[in-house]
Amino acid sequence: MSAERGSAAEVVRVENLAKDFRVGLRARRQRVLEGISFSVRDREIFGFVGPNGAGKTTTLKILMGLIFASAGHATIVGHDVRETEFRRHVGFLPENPYFYDYLTGREILQFYGRLCGLSSARANERVKTLLDWVGLAHAADLRLRTYSKGMLQRIGLAQALVHDPRVVFLDEPMSGLDPIGRKEIRDLILRLREEGKTVFMNTHILTDVEMLCDRVAIIVKGQIRYEGTTDQFLEAGKRETDIVFSSLPPEMASRLEERGAELRGVLGRLEIRVAEKDVTDVLREALAAGAEVVSVAPHRASLESIFLSAVGKAQQRGDSR
Ligand SMILES: Nc1ncnc2c1ncn2[C@@H]1O[C@H](COP(=O)(O)OP(=O)(O)O)[C@@H](O)[C@H]1O
Ligand SMILES: [Mg+2]
Image (cartoon, rainbow, N blue to C red; front, side):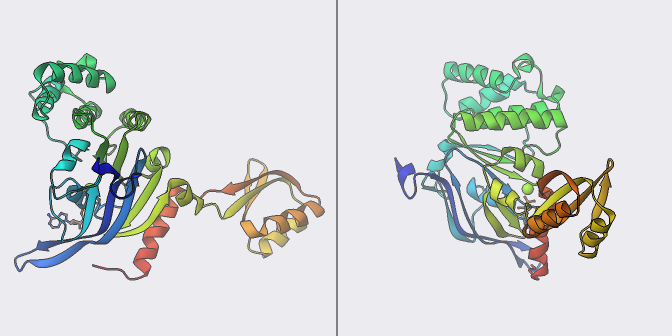
């Protein structure tokens, strides 16, 4: 099978992809993707992460063969995305799927099943399986008009799975959902991975990245800023350590403050944040002065702050469009 072309472990491969849009009356050229490269591995949940306007949906549309790249190359399971073969391997949930809302959940899935070439009997069977899988068996015969946003998103996911694809592409699958709806979608995405699927998801919701994604690529203003494991990405925030004291002699406290450490009182205890490299020295000195230590723990910057600093660096470098 051609999936084994190139690296078998690579399900999606993007090389130097660029996209220009022509805008305005004089058709000024706007470069929206500036030659991006990344790859998605077999059976992983891959997060394509970036702020609004970064170029995520544009990239996904190129991958789905809906628009064409201005330069560069992309393959899905070894097939060029400008050809049609790859389509039977992929499921796609767009950001705001539009369904005829006078159809029922069962009818819409049957419609997509037949569209994918399933026989009527096979489509019925598949639809039943999927309705159970997304937890909508009870609402199968209600019109989509009566569905909540979360239910619509689950029907959208079922639609993307009708032909049992190997790779599933999701554009902002959790946006606009309430916490329960988000958890439901998250759990389904995790189940997809358990069932051996590869998941590609566009998102700007960082907690979902942290909870779901094995690897991420960070895109800012049409350029990839980072590609790697989510763990490594989070690691960037672990360079500081929080030390909590139950007691700290006042002279030691002022010495630490002189060195620039910020002391905070928390529930009758004192906490300081120090650089990782200073932990041993600070502890040795404090213990020698008679301090009592409650805990020493790596401080993990919030995903937001790591992300913002990646975005900030891009802006400081003066990148502009
Ligand atoms: N059809 C289009 N014509 C012109 N500009 C577009 C078009 N589609 C998207 N863009 C622009 O491309 C940039 C990236 O958009 P998009 O890929 O939708 O970002 P994201 O999905 O990351 O929010 C934005 O500046 C957007 O305005
Ligand atoms: Mg988008």
